[in-house]
Image (cartoon, helix red, strand yellow):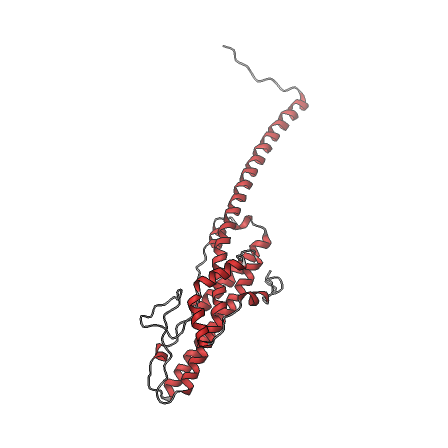
Length: 261
């Protein structure tokens, strides 16, 4: 059995050579580890961007629905207000309608206000921040995505406040001064919430456009045509307009122009 003893290092030159070999080996190992980690995070970012694209499209379409149906909803509220103001001692009731497909409340006998205002509960951006993926995106994109999701939260809050006007508007109830004033106040409150939701929706569409999460316009049009056909028919029957989401988006300044970039 032969035992090979380590060779003695003769001189500083040999010693430096051995150290250099060790250092280079460590650097190669560290570099390889960093490359593996970089590839891992690039994969996570690509996966996160795809999830953002899907959720962003849902958010954009919900916002487009609000912008599209908003003018008709406001027109209905104006007609209700006129009924209250011009009725005599007994209210001329607003005809009850079948709810739109995506309202957040159910009224068995029908609703006095018909419109498309939908909430989308976002989850992707928060998840990407929590698991560290967001930190590996470009800083400018992190800022813009944060702004877009903050606008979405504001829009959701405004939309969630929209409640169907008092169902009393659909009944021939007696009208004394206090009742008339109460119904007018209720209609005004709902109208303000609708206006806030429309404004938030248009702002959100602009923010999603600026982070490249807006779906193709034709896809949005197809979506609205499918989901809003019943509402469009109803609004046309009443002679009430629908909104032009494309025109509203075109007038929305970019995040940079709004000082939010």
